[in-house]
Amino acid sequence: MKKYILTYLLSICSFLIASAQYDDRFYFPSNEWNKIEDMNYVELFFKIESDSIHALILKPEIKPIASVLFYHGAGGNISTYMNITKPLVEAGYQVFMIDFRGYGKSTGTPTHKNIANDAQLVFDRIIKREEFKSLPIIIYGTSMGTQIAVKIAKDNQLKVDALILDGTISSFTDMALLTAPDEQKQVIAQYVTSPYAAKNDIKEIKNMPKLFIHSKEDRAVPFEQGETVFLNALEPKEFWVYNGDHLESSAIYPEIFIQKINNLLKAK
Image (tube, rainbow, N blue to C red; front, side):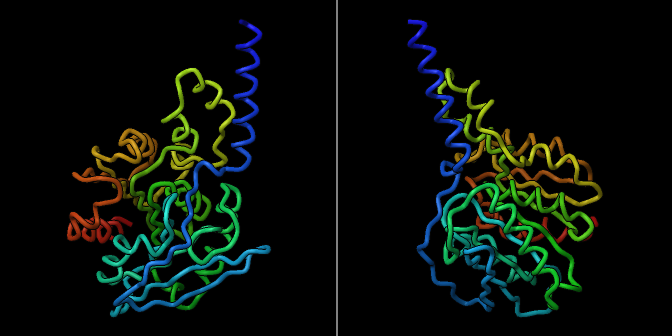
């Protein structure tokens, strides 16, 4: 019996180590593109290694008041997040959206490592464009995208003016533990490691206004994960708790949504 248990645990360890290397359990890319209507936008492609990274710049009809750099969640692609970014554009924000590798019109396969690498390379290039130079920069991450949003904000603090985290995940490891059987949780905690984690990186971000958006009714990401990251964050910060499901604040409370973001620029 003991031999059986030992063999079983070793097999779990081997499986988890392999899973941690490929990251395929965290990302669910879709190439199905939703038509973008009634919006002015510029389409961009960035060549990185052997892949092509697709992005959009959504342009408001008025002179932009700030630029929002948007990082999407684990599913879909940037065309499926227009319910969040369209209200921003209508309110006068210029929005930059990037598809991670394998998502939308981007090629390749997403991993924790290449998402972080690509996001930084593209950040360095986009802020040099003329239409971004004179505008405040706001980083906006949703769901799984909150991990890279916090990392980019942490690594570029002198260039970023505010941070928004919507449906915040505390770490990749914490998400893996959600559905794991109790007997596997200790092994997962040890071997499914997070190369970057919002709950840790947020502690290093200083003097940057932060808006956290989360619902206690969120069925995709537990409210407690967002609360953990919020509590670890330094001031200035605000936690907007709304009634609704995952990433629904902009649809249910559009006026409050925009007002909260406008207030970020005043807090800088």
